[in-house]
Image (cartoon, rainbow, N blue to C red; front, top):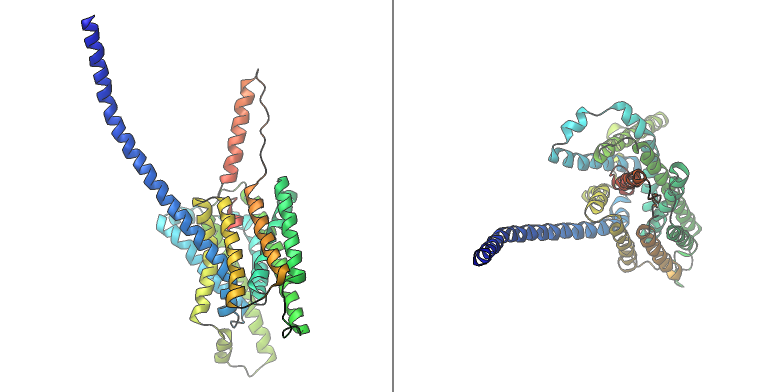
Length: 396
């Protein structure tokens, strides 16, 4: 008995000694996990704040610093060049550019990006002309209506349905767009005389913003459908879209120059070059750089925070735009304008927070193969949702 007790105590002490080392390793691993989580949380918060600032201040920056740069094609060209630089930085930084450029295929690019790039060119032109005409709140609310068209086109072209809450959110968003269109401004007694030209200009800007939202949803759905079978780097797709966009703008500028030179024979090259850059300042380039960085910020927010938290950044941007318009620009929207902002905020949160639930078929107990097949199909569907190629469109 004594021998057994001694052996038992020795085993116990040995087990205790063995448990000391793993406990230190576990503590070290736990501290590393905690530090990594805190760093990831910090990155998430920083990118969320930056995205909210970008969404909120971008319409105001365009009105303050880009309105006088009247050559819209040149603005779009500069944005395309900045997007190329922004997309090249991570490719060069990570060293992926060698692999991506060596495996690049013109046929794949033509199949996936040419048609969406042409649509995006028209959309960019409409957006660039609308954002300097409308106030920031009206522009942002109408820009959010692309969610409606994306949901409709994704259902028609890809067969993806929306949840019941998402349908309600879309109805709320339609109501906000109607409110902002009907009663987006409130005038004082001294400002009651609104010229017909101003009303026509506002309606024109709203029409352009609404059409741009439809085109954005259409181009995004085409890319999503094309990339379902093509796993491609999002930065490479950005490079292709920007290059085609620049080519379209250069062709448009060249056509305008040829047309203008044929009508006015005494136009000198120096005067034409000067008129090309009329209204440009250093802050114009900064404003366009902020717009080019928007897509990159969306990608980082989705990576570190997820699509649900991204909606809070969009909501924060909407509220920031309303604050800037009310405080800085002293714009009065009236009750309808503020209600429309609140409805757009609510619909964005509801649409993102309640996605459709994917129900896997219930496996039969007498066939275990059915259960394993069901699990595999569920995993593949979740992988599709996490595929960055299919999340490219919200980032755009």
